[in-house]
Image (cartoon, rainbow, N blue to C red; front, side):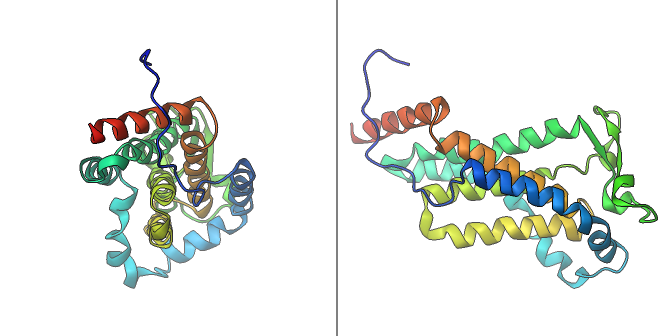
Length: 228
């Protein structure tokens, strides 16, 4: 950090969309409770094609949960938001960090994807051990959902910066999670566990702490440079 102090940005992120640790704990609890619904719900999606008529529609929303969309939107905000351009760094971090965390967790938890599961066993049969690394392949990388982790983190970052759009962002994140369950890529608990990663990223990036203070310093610098 440079020697010359830079005052805090006159713009501050909204409290909307920034969860607390209690909300994170609730999300983790819901992920555990969802194990009871995982097999019957995914059976309905995969074997009985419950939402097959919505397949193409839901697939069109999947990019909201992918890094290229996060990078493109963050770059657009940085280029167009003038004095508020610094918030683009927070939004990018909220979207990209939980995706990286999800990929890391996949290396420690081996869980078969619904579309590769025969549905003859119980929910515990979907777990195939620990520490699979990369050798297990995509079929054993169900937990957690990387798309959902990115979408939820992205949603919360956008909501904190632009609270008037919180319903739109929330719906988009929800549709991404639904699409991952509908296509048989993930169980419901996979998406809820991923949502917890998105919440954790928002808490770290926007909540109190050294990471948030660093982003505040960066935003203030961007704001000062835009006025120069």
